[in-house]
Length: 154
Image: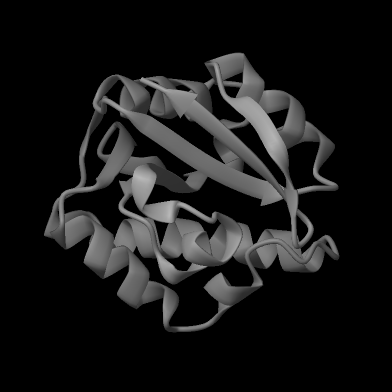
């Protein structure tokens, strides 16, 4: 079931993001290094409290999450007109759910819940994500500071 996260989900979402960041780090990837820091909890808390995190819950366990949020300082660094859109961040799925299309379902749900421009970014060298996002109608805008930029009108 996909639903908006509540305050009760905060720890589960935070730990899901931390585990994924640790997996990336162990694999030698630079993606999500900032989420290894305890400050990641502040991002999660802020997004959950503002009603902008969707979770995928299966049998009472949060196995995926995604944030659909106003622009952050990160987005202002990558986009010249950052205030013209909302941003999809922290799409995360428990590794045990690989192949079960949880990420796809979260993406489709989040996109159905918004109107206007939605943007996201990913590491430019991440071939999987650079091929994944266009499946949802995102258009490649270009690269900036080593990140691929994507946008979609909903």
